[in-house]
Length: 313
Ligand SMILES: [Zn+2]
Image (cartoon, rainbow, N blue to C red):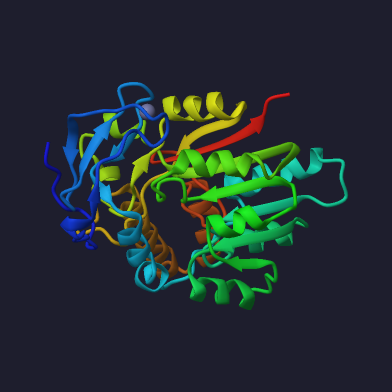
């Protein structure tokens, strides 16, 4: 099935830099694509672990070239993570169960540092690794000192052990996500955990619009519950937490078809109406009761997969 564009940012990959690959989570060879994305990349569904992935995919060099200007192009604005975000709630709970004086968090692909900033505010000792130099500068401006410019090379140079390693919107990007998880396992302390937040591959089957495959065309694979099982089996890990939630961010959509756009429009109209009636004091509590307030993270939807993996005893 050929999928129509939904994202304003279609990508024209250099057709001379495409490479066939097997399932990036379990290594199974699959042949027939299920979909063709708007960037003309075929999407295969793994017959073994049910993950979806791109093949033939852009080569590592082509991806590095693409990512060299990634943050400037795609993340010009600040990403603000509300304190009610379920990932931060998880950290708070995990910290409270941790008997050590320091709770160490490593964020691989930390971007502009908004997640680490919140974790630091909660008392964690934070380290970040990020490929993009301007994103690293933004981290430093937030007062985050321990941020390294690089990728796998930096991971291999670390000699610390961490209580939590974070992959926020990362595992869908590299060509070798299973190798990344294996390398991260080597950086976990005995009770250490890996937190993964990524577009949910299991949502693709039930979504008749196939939104996941029509936006963010730099994504090279989509994690599913079966692929999580494969990663756990390979690395002697167990699932600590597993949750599907949320909606795609609609900022880059050609059409505003998502629930996020709908709620923000309705929120604007409600606020204007209450202001005109001089009922400003009612605005926040009312929006909060309707589930629109910024301080409340919606757990509806199933666009994202939020899972935490821990080492087997
Ligand atoms: Zn697979």
